[in-house]
Length: 303
Image (cartoon, rainbow, N blue to C red):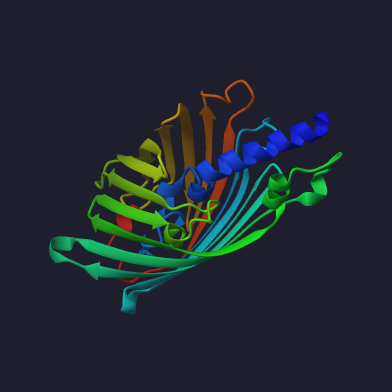
């Protein structure tokens, strides 16, 4: 009976975190791959970019999330168009989530060097539980069993991004179809706004600052990021280090190294709230590979 109660509580925790965090799964270092959360973010400095990341959250906390993430983009400069694909897999306790996105983005040149990107993505979402790891003793509550059944959904994301020299402004709405489906409470609509500024000069150190705000149902979260880019030349950024603070008492650091077309990032963050006594923090590794530099780069400073 005690085992059953423990499993039931664990499932309730999974459902609780699912409602609050499932729709806004993201890596820490999204400033170097904004496409990871916004289909409208275009990398016009290269013909293509591949990104992979692994994130282990709340190490030493039983059932903590593990995220595996990959993106790929292809920029067609003659058509001002970017095609992209994103694959996301996450495990939280006995809970499994998979998300596959295909996206299209178009770049519009406005007056005075302003560029407006518009993006749309369609996603296939799967949600299930690893039943092989669950054992029940005695009778089972029907509502618990219903939660163990897998579920497939189709959804869509839409976003915009406005670029002007050292500035980026963007907004995204995730899981728009969930607004018209009251039964889909696993992938709720999530809205994000962000702004990023980065110095672009010949100094060996440039600074960047980013602000972002997240909204899902009646829950709100904000984040501020400050990064120093240590430059070898005016066009390369071989090393960077940044710090960020996220509301709900979470702080972290990001380290990055650039080696030709490769970029490697490591980040760690620590939650000083309800998990601080039960976890060794969260850790993340990201690898970015850019291939075939674009001939008509309009925003190379960003990359």
